Image 1 (tube, rainbow, N blue to C red):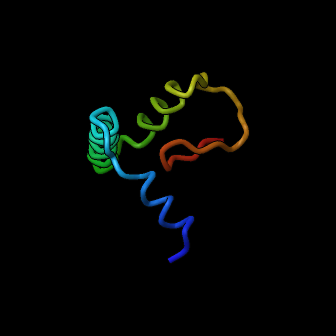
Image 2 (image 1 turned 30 degrees about the horizontal axis):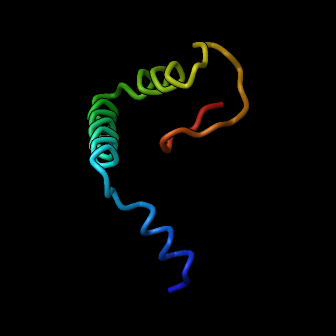
Length: 72
C-alpha cells in the first residue's frame, strides 16, 4: 500500500473526543435522511440541505455536492 493511502487512512481516524462526536452526528443525520427517503420525503431533505448550505429555495446555482447529495 502506498504511503499516501496510509496517511489518508490515518487522517480519517477519530482520535479526539470532538472528532468522535462529529462522526456520531454525521452518522445520525445519514440515518435520519435514509429513513425520510424511505418514506418518500427526499425533496424535503434536499430543501433542508440547500438551506443549510445558504441557498434559497428557488435559487439557480451551478452543480455542487454536499454530503453525497448533488444540487443544481
